[in-house]
Structures are given as C-alpha cells and as structure tokens.
Length: 619
Image 1: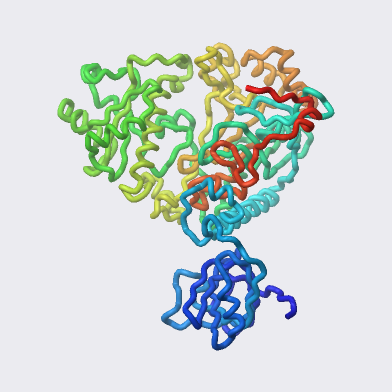
Image 2: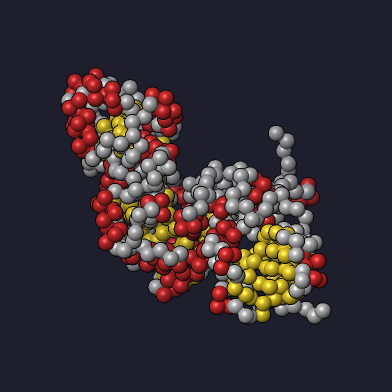
C-alpha cells in the first residue's frame, strides 16, 4: 500500500464534485453502524462530509471501519456521489453528496475525549480550556479563528493601502504608568532591575513619529495585570497606529476605512462616517461613555415634577431625574422589582424609583408627561433614577464651562448602568435589542439591515473627555487617560485652577455598549508635557527619572501627532457573535489569569531564582 496524498478538503465538496475520485484526511466526528453500511462523518478545518463504507462493495474497508471511534484520525480514498433525494441533509453544506469509500486507513487512534467536539455546547469551560486542543477542533471555534485571520488580513491591507508602515516595537521595556499593573521580567545581568511587558506601545509609537516614520501601525501584543472579565484578558492584541500632522477627523477617517474593510471580511456592510457625540452628551443621553445605540436613550424628566413633588419624593432638586425605558418588558411585579434592586448601583449618589403605578397614583400628571417624553407604550417598562440629597460625593463641581458636574455624572452613570442591566436581563423577553428610530432610519438608508437587533452594529465616536478625574482617597486630580494626551488649547490656562473643566483631545470608539478603541492627539511640546506632569503633582526629578528619554526626545523637533488603538479581540468577538474573548483567542487564560492547558503560572526551580537574584519569601 502506497502513501496517500490528500487531494481535497472535506467541507469543499459539493454536488458539482460528483464523480471525482478524492482522498480525504481528518478526524471522525461521528460514527453510525447500520450493519452492512457504516457511516463516518469526517471532519477537517473546512467542514464535515459523510463517508459510506459498504460491506458488499468493500469488505476490507468496512471491517476496518468497525474499529474506528470518534476522534480517530483517518484517511479515506473514494468517489464523490450524489445522495438519494430522501437522504439529502439541507443543514450541511456538503449535504447533497457523500463519499463512497474504496479505501480506509487509520492514521492514529484516540482515547475517548473528556468531551466531544461534535457537541454544540459544552458547559464546563474549565474542562474546555484544560483540553484546549480538543476544544479547538469544534467547528464554531475554527470558524472564529478563520474569521480572526480574515479580519486581521483586511486591516493590514487597508492600512498598508493608506500608506502606513508596520513596525514592531519591543516586548521588553521599562515600567511606565499606563493604568494597570505591569507584568515584570527580572533581569539576570542587571541584579535587582526589571523589564516590563508593554501595556501598550504608547511611548514607542510616539518615538516613531519623532523619528519621521509619518504613519505607523502594528498588530501589537499587549499585557496588563488586571482583574479579568468576559471582554478582558491579561494578554491581548491591539490594532495600534500613530500618524503625524493629523486632525482628529483624520484619525477617524483612517479607522473607519479599515473597520469597514474588517467588517466587509465578515460579510457585513458598515456605513461610514460614524456619528460623533461629546462625552457630556453621551452621559446625558446614554449614561455611559460606551453607548449602545440599540437601546432607547435616557430622558431627563425633572421638569415633569414641581418643587413640592420632588421634596415629597426626597430627590435632589438640583440634579436630573432620568427615565429609563425598556421596550416590551411590561409592568413588573413587586417580586420582580425586588429582584432587580441589586442591578442598581445606589453607591453612585442616586436613588431608584421603580414603582411607576404607585408614582402615578400620587402624581398622575407627572407620569403622563413622562410617558409622552419617553414615547413609552403600554407594554414598556419605565423606571426613574434621581439624585439622592443625602449622598456625599467627594468631588468638585465644574466652575466655568458648563460641563457636567461629578454629581450629575453620578446620576447619569447610575441610570446608564441600570439601562444596560435591564436590557440584558430582559433581552429574550422583548425579542432582542432594538435600535432607536433615528438610528434605524440611518442604518436602513445605508443598506444595513438592523432587523435582528442583536446582530446590528452601531459604531459611534465619543470625544472631548475630561482631562482629569478626581480621586476621593487622595483628594488629587489624576489623569483620566495616559499623561501624554493633549488638552484642548482653549483649556490650557485652567490646568491647575479648574482641572474639572479641562477637556482632553481624547476620543473613544464604541459599538453596541463596548469600547472598541481609544486614542488621542498627543502632547508634542516639552513645555506642555512638563506642565501636565506638574499639574499631576510630579516633580521635575520624578518626571526625568520615569520619562527622561521621552522628554529629551521632545526637544529634537517633534511633529504634532496622534493615534489610536483598537482591540482586535473585541472586534472579532462582536463579529463572531461570541459571548467571551476566550472564544476568539486560540489559547486564552481563565478569569483568574491561569492557562489550564499548560498549567501556568507555575513554580520555578530555586536555581533559576538565584540566577535572577530573587529570593522566595513565605507568606
């Protein structure tokens, strides 16, 4: 018997292939024994095809098939033939044909796996991650990784066509403050000193602009030691870019172009340009800086109540009264309202009014106004969030620019969080997420059908974020973003006198309630950068110690520049319809940052620690 050479992929065969002699190789997905006929579903990366082993036509191959079990690796030589009309499987791409096997070879056997890749859903995620090599055989995960490849390729091609150069930056660098803990790498040749894995290539990409590269991008690996959740991993991938002499709009057009290409690779038309709103507007309308346009907007209905009514309700007369509408959910029972209370974050200085029927008995005219203002139908759920006059919020109100105060933000953010949680909880009850009417019209005009709201995609730019945020514990104003973000020129004179009013030239791209990416126009003058460090309470000596190389680089003719980084993993997760980043990353970590397959992190030998001048301490 000579060596067989694969001639076709299982999932590529169709009715037009009938009559062809093929050699297929892959894993046995399922085996069905009907006596004289044995059916094998053979699986490879491209899909599944049915193999027929007929005892009368080929007794040797049939006898061998009796030994085969799921996940055996086999080779099959045979002829493609149409299935009988009654046997056509419309749920399989290859369902019109089957392979009449002339020869079967077992290339390798397999133990019974802890779960079958043929299963649609596997409940035990820890088991999946421990046996990831089996989990990755599942068609759904293989499709996700193939989609990731297509998206990454589309992004690369789009950015290359826009004259960006792909440049790799170091994975071992110095520790710099970027919002999360660094992963540290001890140096053997420099005792007591450490490299850090990059949280992002931030300083390096700015250095590349100083170097005259003009337009840089990188599909960059980043590392952050932070608490994890479904859309966060300790190591992740960014689409990172930077460019010289940009306006904010220049960055937006570049991103929209490569995102349209990425979504196009997934077969989805993404209309451009994307809408834009300011941070303050986003908080007022959605209660978050990551707005989900599929859900009804928040509505401030404070003017529906007169002063005595607000005093009776014990709500702050100086703060908004925010109405939240959940379509199709209907009136809730007392038990349901009690169950929903934990969804509301009362610590943010806000209070919940969730019994609209009781409210209507005392203030019928107000409730009529609220229903009119929100457009609430009879089968919609309405709840209100208002300011708690007894709450103490350790932060400063703005003084001069009319921006939202910290107390207003507290009410809006509490309402926004509840808006999101209610929509998640009741998504099945009212069908799916549904975009607001104005967004639906825009989407339909752009040939993007949002009929299935859960699979509609609504990107939006959020701009003009606060430059600083107040830290109640220390009483200090800290950078809301990294300290290399440029403030608006008009706000520079208020950096120390009124930090709450200073706007950053910072922007986020959100989609369906997730942050896809963030960026900014950078500081490119040393005097401005030093001023920002000083406003953060950083001495000249401390600034030189932590960022000396960068401050020096700013003295050698730095051009204006700006950029952005988008999460590739999140983009793929959204397009794949996956519930977690772990379903679009080949080898992810658990929520506790553990790789169950290779059992990492793990202890190392004392000899290795001695080489690194590290001593193990018992705790």
